[in-house]
Length: 188
Image 1 (tube, rainbow, N blue to C red):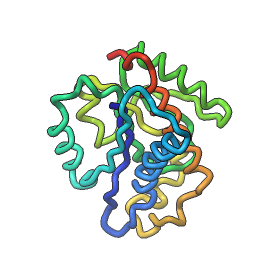
Image 2 (cartoon, rainbow, N blue to C red):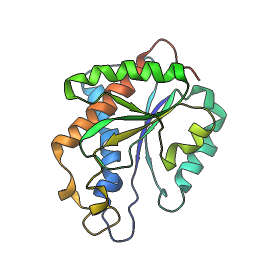
Image 3 (spheres, rainbow, N blue to C red):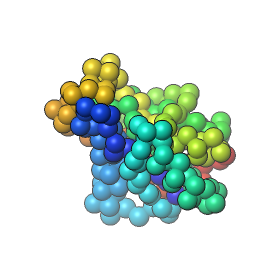
Image 4 (spheres, helix red, strand yellow):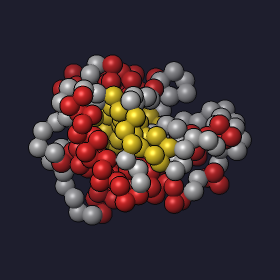
């Protein structure tokens, strides 16, 4: 399983369009693009739209409890939860061998100048999996404006830039598809 994800819940006054509707959208769009292109990877691509992230990650905990018995089948868990602004790369958590593979995959994104692999991945919703050794990735992007809108009434669809969201979706699509279509799973 290659898991792509974002969460649907927002915080009190906001609509949650940027935090984290954008992450949910690009995860949905990645699978939609793969389907529209007629691509059928060797492994399962799974979209999870988390709930309860802002309330202590209760949705992620429940999902983990329901699926942890199959942890050896999870190739990578990916979460976008820092907005969907201009992407710069991926945060990655995993073995050195897996990191080398992810760095090679990221070279495919040279045409859109999104190739950097940062030293760690983070995300409340994928933390259980990474703690237990499943490689993890989180979208990294220009978060200079993130806290202008985060958990505020300003977190509406007007914050989203369609071009930047498309670039984020492209990153998610390429990385998830290539990993799902490799002969072997990422090394743990």
